[in-house]
Length: 463
Image (cartoon, rainbow, N blue to C red):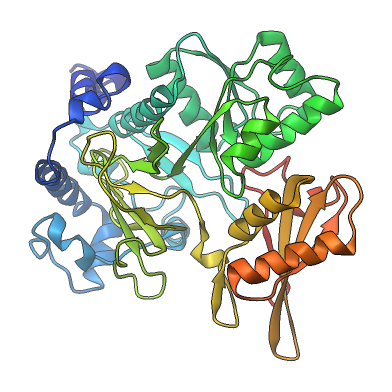
């Protein structure tokens, strides 16, 4: 019996045909109508749904709501299915260790059973969650990430320095595979500041002539400060020309300036889904990869779709994950909103703004919804000498909630600067937020910027 190997399982000809990248993107999709795209999505969803009905996790999830096979006819019925989140997956792992019952490996006949590519989440908020991929789902997400990198201007000639974590977690491995398999650039897997000390990282970048950096913007910004501390000039001694990052609270302008004018591109994805959306040279928002995903923006309280242009949770259905771990209506609890208007690339993809915060990290003060990342971005933009590091603390006194934003600034800080920043926040947010100005590096123990992929930005002392 022939072995059902990785290359056979990933179906290389179909990957090239169905998910164009490089010179073929966006040209292969230009002129495609929204109706034609919807028909493709519906076809892929029906196949995904058939597979998911064979997976015990979905049988339980949907059965508990009285949903039976045949009740969901196609993509138009998607909102009728209940959404789930990481807590549901971790409950599955606890009940069915070690992998949970959300994979469908046993649904395949033995001779066509895909191998499992196994990684985990970082586990920074608890027990790591297993992340399971088959060859097809792994290479589709790799290819989609390469699509974004190539669209941003990455080439085979680049030397790409990665500060994504490696070890058990998915991020660094997935990004490395995307660059190696589909871009062809040289890849330096430096990892976080725990894996490779920050001072050593900047010397590695100098020694090997790094021209691009990929990772989370908070730490990429931190490395520019470390380079200067080591007597190196970012952009000259380390010739970075391209940064592809998860921006979060950082702005493109500040990160570009920190690295000597490098071009900065934002993208969004999570470990379970791979890349969902990415920015292109048009700078008109993130293009949602709708040939691979059906993305809903939902009200955090009701779970129902929000009106266009309204903030909501990203609820993702991965239309290509029909080999090991099907994902149908996974609530990331990451918040964004849709960008309205026609797509300037001439393709039928919707666009969204970047990551705007987490609904489970949202703080409500006097009826106003606040996200720590949004507050930090405002402060960093307005403070002038800000290092980019901040953290928000929420407290309760005499039945009243209050927030203080702690911001690192270089040089002298005084009451006038603090009062100016507090006034700016009051005007922009419509609610009072106190500001505390701190010395550079003083918040590192709280934010854990050098050890975590996503630094801590909120401490809730009410809990």
